[in-house]
Length: 77
Image 1 (cartoon, one colour):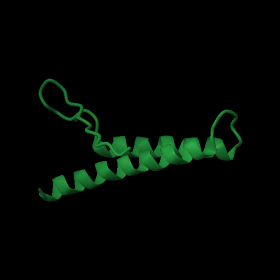
Image 2: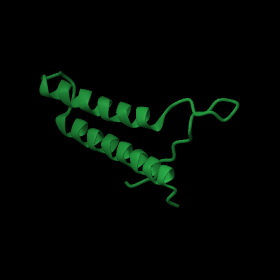
Image 3: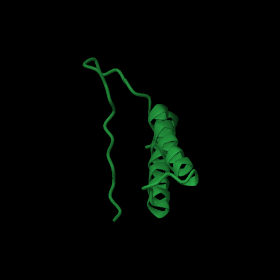
Image 4: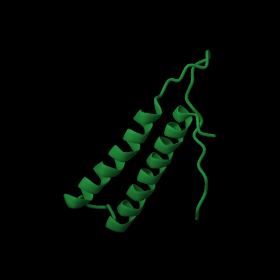
């Protein structure tokens, strides 16, 4: 399954950005990294293949956010 994910910016009532994209991508990578460390530590109830797949997808999403931000800041269409 390959679906596009749209993440609306989190803004206040004046249109000011409330959550930086860099913080979102960092959070996604941190969550994935934490899951991997839990599996490596032998945490019960975590399936290694599932954690690996989810961590990869989180990293891909973080990469897409980063690329979109770079394109936006460079003025690319």
